[in-house]
Image (cartoon, rainbow, N blue to C red; front, side, top):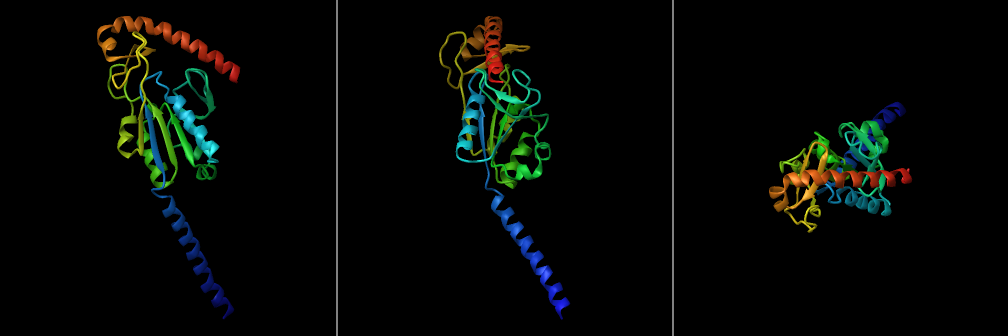
Length: 231
C-alpha cells in the first residue's frame, strides 16, 4: 500500500511541476516588446540606444548588448558612439546564436537586449519574434533603414510591423548646416558617408562625396582618441 501511494504521488508532483512550467511559460509569451531606433548615419542611433539601455539598468533590469561582428570601426567588443561613448557588448555574426553563446541560464535571466548595427543581421526578424513573443523580453534595436542610394538596407524595415514603438532620427546636413527632418538622406562612396538633405543629395552629390571624407576622417580620429582614453 505504501508503495502504491508513493507511486501515485510521484505523477501528481510531476504534473504539478509541468503545470507550473506551462503557467510560467504562458506568462512570458507575448509579454515582451520591440522598440526600433532607425535613421541615417550620424543621427545619434547608438547614443539613443545606450541612453535607453542605461535607463533600463537604473531601473534594476538585467541587460545585454549585442552588435554585428562586422562593425569593427572603433572597438571590437563595445558599442561606441561617434563621440566616443562606449558600452561593453557581444559582437556576433548572427543573433540566433546569442542565447547559446551567452549561456542559457544567464539568457533566461535577461530582461532587456540591445542590438546595435541591426541592419547587418539577416535573422533580425526571427530573433526579435522569439525574444519578445516567446521569451517575454524587451528588445531595443538600432540600425540604418536605408543605404547611400536611398534604398532599404538590411532587415530593419522588416520588423516595423511587429514593433511596439518606432523612432526615426534625423541628422544635420553637412553641406548647408540645416537640421534635416524626414528628408535626411545618405550619400557616399566606398567607406565615405555623411548625412545631407534632399536638396544637396540631388544637386551636389559629387561635392558631398569629396567633403564627406574630411568630415569622416576628423570624426573617426576624435572618436578613436576618446575610446583609447575610455579603455
